[in-house]
Every structure is written in C-alpha cells, then in structure tokens.
Image (tube, rainbow, N blue to C red; front, side):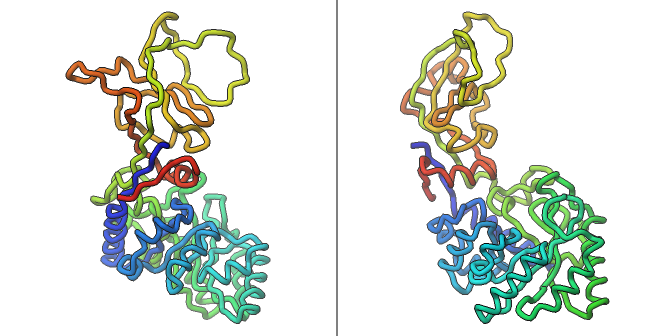
Length: 365
C-alpha cells in the first residue's frame, strides 16, 4: 500500500517553537489536532507531558477525537471547537472542558447536561465578524450574553471569532479590534470578566510579531502552522518551522510508454477525473505510471510531487496515473520503474484524508 511518513520529532519541534513564540508575546494557544482524525497512536507520540505543559489546551472538532484526548491524558484541558449538535451535549460536557458556541438553544441544553453531571461547563461565545460561518450576529450580542449569564452551570470565559476559514476574510487589525471592543462593552454592561479573546489562528500568526494584533486578543487556535510550518495568510514558512513533517509515498504498479490521447468514443460514464487534454499529435506518446492510491484516499489537488517533471494524467477510485515525460535523469538513466516509488508533499487536507483512509499505511519516524 501507499505510505504516509510522519516525522513526529519535527512536529514536536514546531509546537515547542510556537509555544516559545507565544510566551514571548504574552499570548496563549490551543493546539488543534483535527488533522490527525483522533489517531491515538499519533497523539501519544506528540502530546507528551513536556509539550502539553506549554499549551493552554488541546482542541478538536470531532467528539471521537476529544474522547481520545481525554483517554490519553484525563488532566489535559480539552476544547471542542465546533458548535455542538444538540444530540451530543452530554458527551460534550463529559469530555470537553471548553466548547465554542453560537446558539442559545444549544447552550441552554449544555447547561442542563452540566447540571446532570454536577459540573460547570466553560464556553467561548463566537461572534460573526464577516466570515459568515459560526457566530452570533453583532446586533444580537448583548441580549445573547444577558441570557447566557443567567445559566447556573455555564461559565462564559470569553468571546471569539473565526476568520480566514470559509471565505478567506483576512484577520485585519480592525476586525480583531472589533472583537476586543465587544469584550469591553460586555464587561462594562454586565460587570463580568471575560479572560479569553480567541480570534487568532495559523492565519494570524505572522501578524503577532509585527504588532498587528490588538493587545487584548490573547488566545489562538492553531493547527496548520504547528504541523505544516506555514501560515494560510501567505502560504509561506513561518519562522523556521519544519514544512516537511509529512511525506506521502506511492508505489508504481505499472509503467509503459503510452499514447497521450485516449482512443475511442468518450462518454460521460467515467468515474474519475482527468487532466485537460491539450491539442497534440494524435500519435504522440509519453511514459505513464500507475500509482496505488485513488480518490478514496486523497484528492489529487492535495498532493504535490517532489519531482516537478511529474504531471497528473488521471485518477479513479483506487489508482492514479501520472506522466513521467521521457523518464530519464540527468545521467541518461531511467528514473522510475515498476516497484519504485513516487514521493508527494501533502497539504493539510491531504494529510487529513490520508489518515482517514483504511488503505494507506502510516509510518512514524
């Protein structure tokens, strides 16, 4: 089977570097592990006591993953980063110390679940700042907080926002300042302390060192930068974090010189995806290789070959075809053969899907 290699030492180094950076700038952060899909063996290798002690909390958007975090370390502070579904409120209270919320009905049910479990459940209320994903509308915010403050088993510990995730709205200083101003307004009106302002993520990291983040915004939810060493703001390496902790290796299961163009009547019955066919000589040929993974494992747009001369041809449910050109290296020898491997750099979504696939091996180095 194709193989995903994971260098856990590089991931740990990234996490520790971010922790130091945050401490220097008086910020706290939650490590968001959803890319790992709750893989307990991987979490065990990364979330060592030395790593955890420098984190505010560890978060995920899947309850099964939150359960595994608590199984790994019951004392670890966990944060559920997606507004909970009503049917899961008891489990959210049981396994998540904190949850992000934007629906009063859900918070009301969390309050009842917390009462049943003799707990006080902590929440961060999300505010809509233009990304049009989760968040309370700004003109309803004060009434929303007034209702929530009256619940006995809910402790509101802050407010937050989500930017740069769905539409890509940038976390500008003005956007983040709005979040801080709402904090001041709520604290003044209700005489309540909101210690956490959670508006930061991997996309916001490059702004911290340049004083482009308001002082009061003190909490970040970070996944991509910790695991891939980059920020979605510019897709560039952040500080000197490792960007190669994940490498995907596929096996070559067929290699022939074949025509560039398919032969026959083309219908709409194909089950895969192919590259756009440019006008070319009907008799032209190239070296094509078939690899042992497909759409069920990962989308072709989420992996990039290390060899820039390798081009995508097509992909079906369980196989991918690539164009190797003349398949000759600088010394005039064949570069690839059946039984050999092709290496790819997977994206965040690529790793998430590969870890979810039952047909991809995992190796920790």
